[in-house]
Length: 200
Image 1 (cartoon, helix red, strand yellow):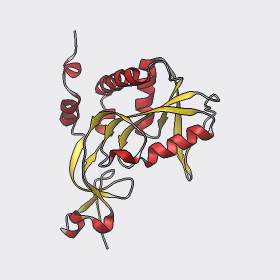
Image 2: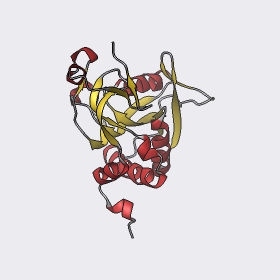
Image 3: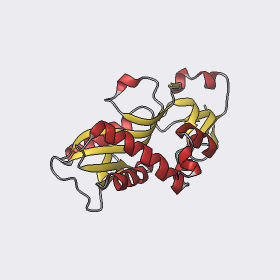
Image 4: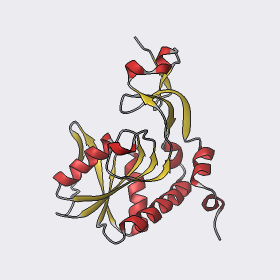
């Protein structure tokens, strides 16, 4: 018998957890947006995280079949999701940590030469993090065969190789000097701290 969480749609679960916030936010990319996905509202609920990762794994299995050798999760939220997806797929998992040049493997982790690798991440906005993760995996000797995210919020879908997404939400984001929210003097907030950012 399915649990109450398993019965609900992905959109219902994200809504109930308060994952999507509206306002005027500066994203990790530096761009501004009227909405923000707070992935930690998902990650602080292990049971819901497991259900959503199981749905991601189902999508991945249908797309990739037996091709994948290894799962890789970029810091920070991607690590947790990658672990759960790897457990469901019964695969090994490595983690990329942030460095000045992008991402790197630390703590003795390695990727076998030629390993067919799946990247699992949380929220996709511009694709820069996935690109950096891809580069790190190739430099370590692996081969990226698939990329999957929990939430894809890109406006333009052709800016990156095909990415599997559990949930897609198109929205506007802007360069700071072209942001209509700034023009309208809507307070700018750092979504990680909840604090207003004073603009010059």
